[in-house]
Image 1: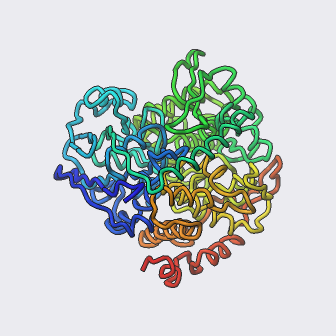
Image 2: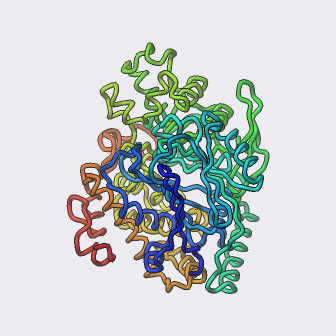
Image 3: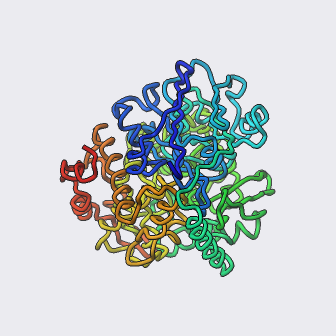
Amino acid sequence: MYGWNGKVLRVNLTSGEIAIEEVNPQMARDFIGGRGWAIRYLYDEVDPKIGPLSPENKLIFGTGPLTATPAPTGNRYMVVTKSPLTDALSCSNSGGFFPTEMKRTGFDLFIFEGKAERPVYLWVHDGEAELRPADHLWGKDVFETDDIVRAETDTRARVACIGPAGERLARIAAIMNDKHRAAARSGVGAVMGSKNLKAVAVRGTQTPALAHPEQMKALCREVTEEVKKAVEAGSALRIYGTAYVPPVTNEVGILPTRNFQTGVFAHAEDISGRVLREKYLIRPKACYGCPIACGRLTKIDEPPYVGEGEGPEYETIASLGSACGIGNLAAITYANYLCNQLGLDTISTGVTIACAMELFERGILPESDVGMPLRFGDADAMIEMVRRAGLRDGFGDLIAEGSYRLASHYGHPEYAIVAKKQEFPGYDPRGAKGMGLLYATSNIGASHMAGDTAYMEVFGVPKRLDPLSIDDKPAYVKYFEDIFAIVDAAGLCVFLSIRHLFESTYKLEPVRISRMMEYATGAGYDEETLLKAGERIYNLERMFLVRAGFSRADDTLPPRMLQEPMPEGAAEGHVVELDKMLSEYYRLRGWDENGVPTQEKLAELGLL
């Protein structure tokens, strides 16, 4: 095989057995890698009705055929499992340096099954693997764990681990790698904690051969030069990171504010990339092999907010900032560091705290339950809730359960801004209606990483769509979901992929990425086969949900999005006309009216 290692490392945590398996070449091609291979294994081996935190669930780390290749941003890995937050799927991805090092160990996938009797960590190096005791690591935060594991294995190793949040099975816990990078969403850290798996350390020197190395190098050089020219011309991602976005979403009226009660925030400029750059930026920071460097290495020294680390990114600013009514960027940055240290998803954490703030201000959540006032705009209260959530301390025990369970506990689930129980990212869909359909239909719950139509509706890439119109949105949502499946499975970052690896026509044609895939693997990829593979992955994920009991009733949005018109701003008066889009989306997908893929569609995709 080219591009792939063609090997899976299977780790039975119950017995301690570690096995190496060869990958079927046809399966490899049909499901690309990473996210695609992982759902194939999960669908075949896991009963979708099992408890996500039971030993019967499996946790899969997956790289793609373009991970650890010359492909710009070819440095992502996926974490796939049944989600304890949504009871659906998790497909969380992360960059940094861990994914490349993982691929270089000689394996494409790690499959963890069962549950260790006591805490352990996995050490994988150049085709060899061993489980080691981790009792001494249990209770350590992410930063401490990373340092200790590298000291015990190899100082050049890369580490993915959980913090106290994952150990305590917080449903909003992340898996952190390289200390500050996160496979964050859907509670994957809780699944890792439920297995008593504290960390995974990787070090390798094995790089899979490419089918057409010279053509690959030439294409990658061409793309890299194109990106460098964009950077030299003043790329906002390089200058400000994703933190450039708050004023943009605020202008179009979709910046989540006070638990999505509105899309306009008076302090949007105060939490912008400009302020981050002027006051707190040390330098831009890139993941391995990335010419963009959208990461932010930052430092704050404004007591009581003192610290240094990576971030915050836009989604963090929106959730811990405007969604909580907080316009203090130093406080938001400090809360971001704390989330990374404890191992929390910043999106779900921030939006859950925002939900609690609204419940408090409406008189539903008593102050006696929290032990302190919890009002919008109170930065110190927000930070304290982050700490409590990560430790499941007091009221933090409910924050750790996520918005839906928190709001339901108080009899008002309508104040949880979630889809399939997962918190919304930083785009209010009343003013970007494709995002509304995306949140509702996503196999992992609300997520901009499931198929971000905001590229078109907000940023005009490759062309601008009217964000307030529902015309053609079902077709675009389907298309974006399929191409995001391709990008995830290939092991790439969407930032560069969407802008540079797809032809910028009326839609995103996978011209360059199909060439890159073919040069890497020699497996016969072209535009048509690649798009079909993306659709195949998405449909198999949907079938996992169907077997778990999900249906059209779950493809919905909170009442606020469907019934409460946006009160102000560019989207004033708008709601999401979901039902008008949903049936057309199902038709385009080849699904029945209940959202179940038809036998004809499954046969077409080779899934019967």
